[in-house]
Image 1 (cartoon, one colour):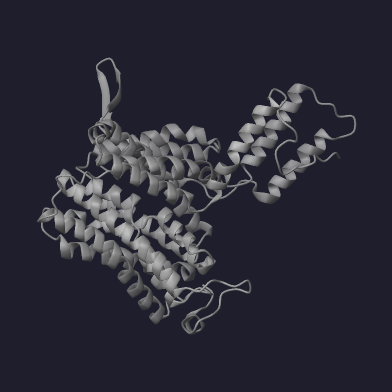
Image 2 (tube, helix red, strand yellow):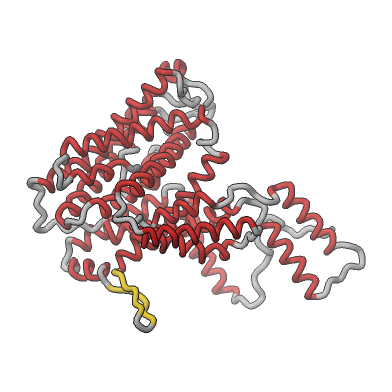
Length: 471
């Protein structure tokens, strides 16, 4: 059988219609972008840039244009029927539904065969996430427990995984792989807790008709799955119906994204072995002696290969791979541009606004690490959890501080918690300040407490040797 020179890569040479000088220029221009996208913390860097741009615009001579941009009305009208919302609504309620859809799939994947698939592996991050949600909320209420401000207790609960991973990336070889895995598992459970908080505490008046509409969309997804429909595009319409139903019902429509994500299958139809067999069979038919397929037969063979390739991995894994770059490098930066701009001129932090800003900032910087360390200490002391190999209590200190980096989810909850522009601005300012301080402290403590890993593996300190074990 003839084997192509690079079966794992793209076809050799260049497309026949392409112009070689221009093709070389395009490839040269793509190299820096490819390297940038390959960096794990690239999305965190882009978020930081987007937040800085938003703050600069909101406090520049273009502040009025910046504010008017996000209030630009968009919509659709058919006869007497019309639907119109500001641009910010399409970002916060529309695009962010895709973000939550990816979050839902990641949660489902981790529960099925990831870090949350076994209770012994999930015990420590679950305890850390729980403590990291309760303590910041308590700290916030200590600063802003008045009736007009207490609704913001959920703002400092969430960890921004992109920023947090970016900070760990700055520490380089001081961070063992197990610490990144622990942070990821903590962030997944943290996101799940934030989703529950949004659904239960930050939803409006409930409309039964909306629940019926959302239920119809979800039943449509179940029916398509029962019929064996595997094309992801077939599920777009019922997913949109579920999204619209949750909006009409008074529940934030991003919750529909989470539910649909949790419903996405996480098991592959063929898997690696089945894909290899299907591939071998198709290639054998093409390479059989005397086999010269016509164009129609060849098209069928190619379609079969494409279907086999699609079913080699689970729908959830495939969709995560497709959507994650769009979410990380498109939706999240746009969200930051729309929500991180806080005009400082005329802002007063006296009275209720000061309590909100302080509660959000201190909840992230102090509440997060205290809650995480206290919960981890209780879980380890009771024997419910054990430290992963290579992780010591110094790593947990750094983890707790870095987990205080709250941005995307915190700003999102702030939008739901406060109708007052003054209180919303104070909450945003507190989130941005707390995130910045937690990031700087995380890097500083990481440099001071953690030693670079050697090629032979991490050196085991006394606290690691005492508490480490496989989880």
